[in-house]
Image 1: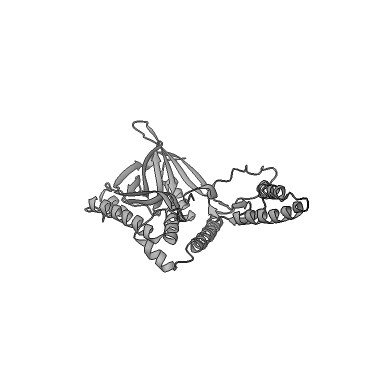
Image 2 (image 1 turned 45 degrees about the vertical axis):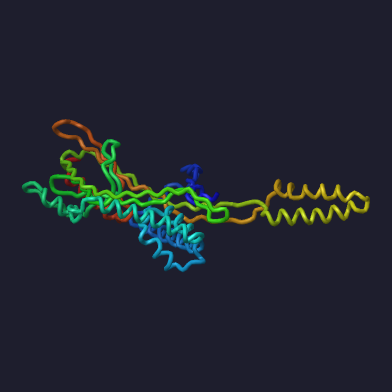
Length: 339
């Protein structure tokens, strides 16, 4: 069975980083804008590689038909899209069944969710809850992928906003997740073990922190890329069969001179066995280049009255430029009481 959801091709490189002494000494770190531009270039290359891989998987089907078939499924990750693409390219009848089940789940979830507050946005909520004399900072909004307080998750896809008095965390996002996981084999005999998962929540969170309580800010940004290749070795079934036939003809002809052709037929069975013990490097399959990046900000907040310590661990959205992130942090430092 083919495991289309396997992460083996994307396994992390376990190779230890080179010793700093062996690498170039006194190499300056590139400026943030250079790192950001390099990361954007790598992301474009990754998207191109994925598009080429998807086009090879669906080469017998027009791309427009593939996109229209996957549009209503609203899949949330690349693995689910690859599984759906594989099913669509091998068995469109089964794909329509999977699509119908997933779309029905999405429709049921959306119909059961309250729609009365779906028009609210972050700025609209905060503007109504500002205190007397409080006003927005000139800094841009920090787009947060995820945030936790003392290792407890607060939410995902939120906005961090700054005023002259408070640091305000707002979540007014639809948390929509639709994914496909499992195994699918479109060749005979067909088999599948798929799991459809749908989630649709509307989160409303308003969590302010006093600017004067901010005591420490730690930044941990890491950008990079990896390129791995999978080496597939071995003889195909057809070549093993051809090797056995050639061996049978050769050994039978040799031992026919001494009237024991059966011995030659027996020895010919050793040919495919020896071929299995000595595989050849048959083909090399290149996996896409993908990004490994981390954009974390840790903010320590100490309540001046209760002396309770809170540590906010923020994962910044990948779509926000690093210059905007640094501007937001700089403004927070200037507004806080840190020295």
